[in-house]
Amino acid sequence: MRHESLGRTLNVVSAKLKDEKAAAAPVEESAKPTFHARERERRANDPENKHLQDAIEAGKARAADFMKSVLDKNHPDHEGAFRIYQDLCGMDTRKAVDHFIESTCREKGARPFEIADPGYEQNIIRKYKPQGNITHEALAFFDIFKSELRAKWDSKGYKGDTEFLEKLSNKYNLPHNDQTLDMRNIKPKD
Image 1 (cartoon, rainbow, N blue to C red):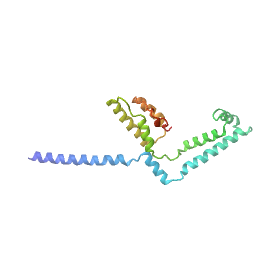
Image 2 (spheres, rainbow, N blue to C red):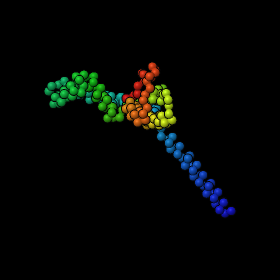
Image 3 (tube, rainbow, N blue to C red):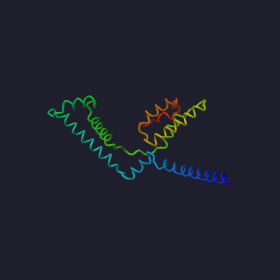
Image 4 (cartoon, helix red, strand yellow):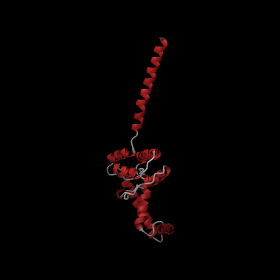
């Protein structure tokens, strides 16, 4: 009898510990917001995206300084700047300005807001859905493909989807299905 009550007590304590662990685990996972949730919060806190505007202005100032050195043959950096202007920008001032804005934004970590787009997500997933004679293995790989893709979107957003989709579709042997007319214009985001 004593062993039975000790066994029941042990079972009750074990069940309580399991319940506490199970209750704590989902809280930890749900406590981490997704990329798009963080973007919504960032947009709510700074609707003007001041950080991006400052980076663009700094990039324009750097481009203006660069163009001064390109256009002034007496400038000490003229030769090197002119070579860069020829080779990198193809003698196009707009390309030079865009290059400096892009590099400054990248250095400062400034970027435009990215809003979640469920339509884009569904179209991309549908584009890789197996068709025809579908095996259990193909469906299993497609499920893994979807979960990895959604995990990427939740952690980093849509940027870099083109390369990521190419690697992932090759890994799981899922060719894209752009045979239907409405799927031909759906492009992953770079």
